[in-house]
Image (tube, rainbow, N blue to C red; front, side, top):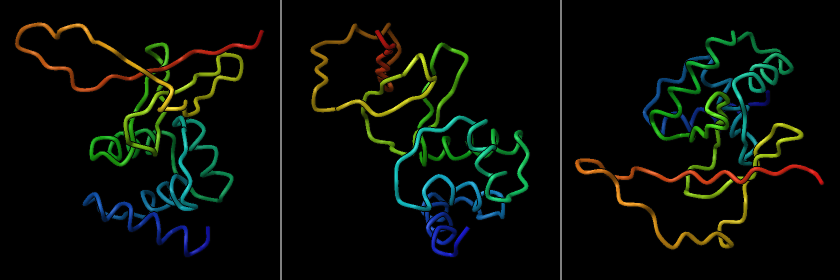
Length: 138
């Protein structure tokens, strides 16, 4: 990885108050080093780290993604209740899940209209609404 992507990853971590360990910086650089938004799974990020010569275990990737999510650097999007995708774009926006290929992309936010939500049960509040639109080829 080049110094610029590592520097961007380090600044991203520092902005959230996370200690920039070697492994965190490596994974952060893969996620945001080029300035583009990404949707990754732990497995796909682990493969990318191996491709770039980084020695990071899959368990470390999972733990690091959870830590990034807990401080608001990324959002976790659950698909099917068993598959987690992590999105570097943290504003509220919908997603397309491409069932045939098994990947997630952003859907146009400006085309989504939600006119009402059900009332939250007493003693609770809605914390967020995730919209995942599932697609398959005809």
